[in-house]
Image (tube, rainbow, N blue to C red; front, side, top):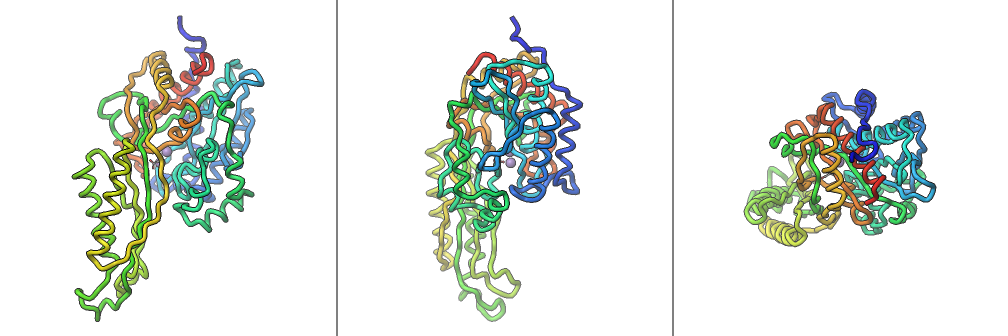
Length: 417
Ligand code: HGY
Ligand code: MN
Ligand code: MN
């Protein structure tokens, strides 16, 4: 017998209107978005989220880590809450689907359940997590809500710590309040997230939905190559201590090392900051933003050791000092099997093709999976593009993904996890 409410579907036109409204906030000329955490455009998007939720008759709330939520009480007062979420912050000059799809889809699910007056075994909460992209601290909001945030994460903020504290203060928050955002895991029935794949496997396999099995582990460091400022014209090439050469040699060597010794893992030098940064001064220092990922904890350790040894070797080669700051470290995570199977059932109800696959991108789902059953649903990305204005997912794929989120939520809310 078909589960109750298995014929329920979202309103695709309302979804699309809502999505386009959000995409206009912080939009860039090439139809990307620029909404780094705590920026004016990010705050504007969060206010939009609240206004939209209130006008849909939903309760709204902000926790002490500035996670923004819309709540639909549709269970008995003591029912647990099923979280449907993602994030409204973006990478600098990113795409309009990363994170936003999941938040708009969650809102649409709550509206659909509300207007059909369903009574479920759980409440439903659409949540927008703070700083998922780690502009300051990676997965800040979900780390705080899940009780995993520690003082050292804040000390090692990837973005400038002073600016981070100022942004918190502007919101009436502080480092201390962040820890008060912790939720009792017993109050949560689970966590579901719809997200764009940000790769091209669904596209290449011509499959409509991805069901994520594991999420990659991520580590990041800041490497300081320290040399000596000298005159660019009068300092012979063999008498320089050029920090820029150490950084550049490291970036190339890191790529070769991972390709050769850790196939399938990835390493990225996302930024190098030279100082003093003038045409006519040999760089005194070069600060490297290093990040690497693997779905295997043991390999992450091995990659870290190999890369830091490589950095030390390049520093020695160019007669430089090396200082290493450890920043983020997120473990590879397996997602709940039962939730994966429920997502598959939702796809079958909707007659959508699906496949199980790992995620090379990090997600709040891997943080929430530490305290409750979590599931992650992928919608296809055109050309696999993401973290760029080229990001695109068709209205049909957005609609399919949101209906899978809705049907999965209904199955979990009615049958428990
Ligand atoms: O970097 C990531 O994988 C994600 O977009 N935060
Ligand atoms: Mn992202
Ligand atoms: Mn994302």
